[in-house]
Length: 180
Ligand SMILES: [Zn+2]
Image (cartoon, rainbow, N blue to C red; front, top):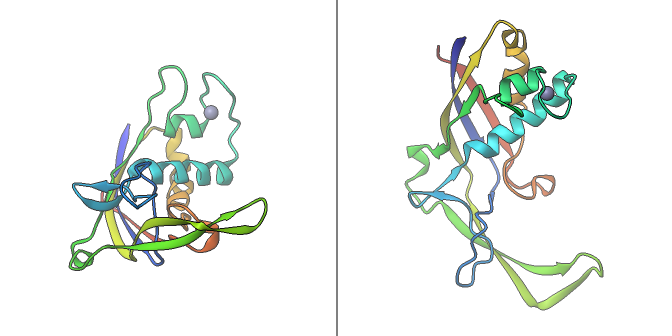
């Protein structure tokens, strides 16, 4: 096994919300927080990297125990632990000097009838554009090392986080640097 460590820096260019599943008071959709501060969960990034990697490599993946590069790196069924560890990404200090969130109010549109329910306003907490940083560790073996560049590309290919990416929310640019 060969450990590679990367520092990752994600510039979020448009507001985002990563739903915490908690509603409180008048806010329907809170964004996730760590020690009170908005962050990007490592699991969110991992899911996107896995999906990008799949599209790039098109591995011969099968249900059940599987030894394809996807399962070898991201973990699979049986005793097949993940070899990639992605930190929760925290807000860079320079981004912290101001109120990090604002509230977006939208009318709840009935998507089927396409009519606005005026009585139903939907209130979302959104995070202002900011920079988030963390590290990614990967334990490569001889086989998965062949996919190192694909994996790096899969990370850099991430173009959005949170809900509403297709509507322009949470657009990101990812910078990746190999540190070991
Ligand atoms: Zn597989």
